[in-house]
Amino acid sequence: MNAFRRFLVFVAGLMGAAGVAAAAAGAHVNAAPNLTTAATFLMLGASAVVGGCALAALRGPGWSFASVGAGIIALGTVLFSGALALRALWDIVVFPMAAPIGGTMLILGWLVLALAAFQREPRAG
Image 1 (cartoon, helix red, strand yellow):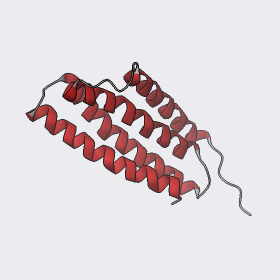
Image 2: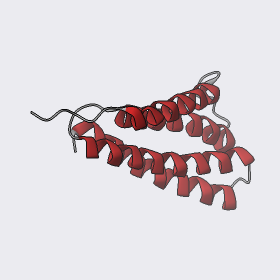
Image 3: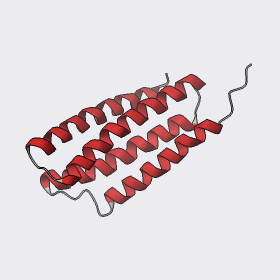
Image 4: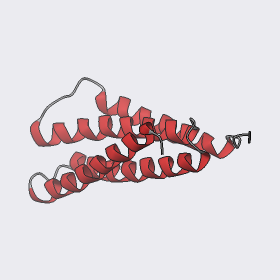
């Protein structure tokens, strides 16, 4: 696995842990619906990133739509869920439109990941 994919798997682990923490905070600290949404997207995004990296690793060390899509999903998830969680827990606004931009990145990341189904196999030798 190349360094970019290792980094993405590391980020996915942090996203999953943050998702569980956000779910716990939603149950015990602040029952805001945005916190529940953030937790759900963090855990789903973490799984998608790991899956995208696994698919990309099957293709070999070079670039693939799967790894690019996984990277966009990771960034979009962190931005979207981070914006929701920070607002729900501490009333902090990351920047205007952070959540919609993150959500748009998530849509784009899923579409790029879908392109992996049509990427040609690398040529031998």
